[in-house]
Amino acid sequence: MEFIREFIEFLRQRKKFWLLPIIVIMVLFGILLITAQNSVVAPFIYTLF
Picture 1: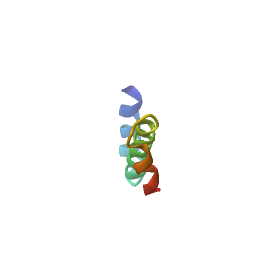
Picture 2: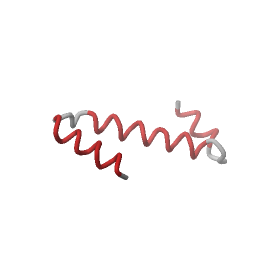
Picture 3: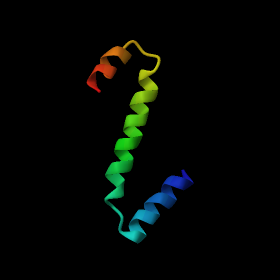
């Protein structure tokens, strides 16, 4: 949790708010890939890409 707090503080100090949507999308995409590896829904998710 300290890393997230430091990252938010970095964004605030450096005015790099444009990085936030990129990081959020990358995290969501990673979560999607991890959950889709061993599930029944995997073939349907892979057809989206």
